[in-house]
Image (cartoon, rainbow, N blue to C red; front, side):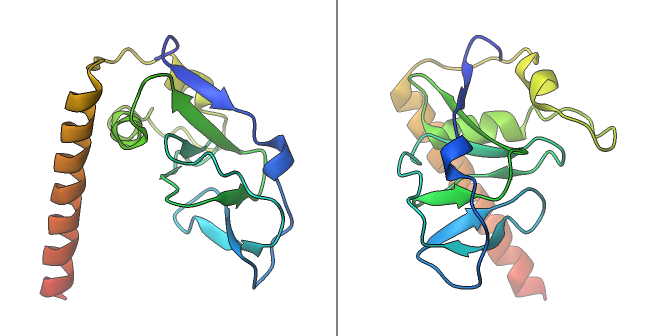
Length: 142
């Protein structure tokens, strides 16, 4: 994955967290939204996937965002759909070995991808629809 995965610099987007604000502040873990802020956000979110370097958590932003700490890495891949990248990362996460930095381990994974953007979009849409269907069935069972 080292050949395709890039880090987007997020240092200027690390902010303090408040209960109110215009933009979501993303943190690591199962509850990605830590709070909100009025600071200037990262608007380049379409093809970015946020990765919790210590927690192996993934978050695909769907709007401008800020982040809570430098443990949140923003990955993108040149000429790759952000949703396709999210699924690629989700299916190739390293094994959890406790508290450590996982971004280098993730980058060293060998993966197979399609370079065709049309195929990436179709695969992403299919997987998104399957995830939504699973979520609906889970809600129905409760």
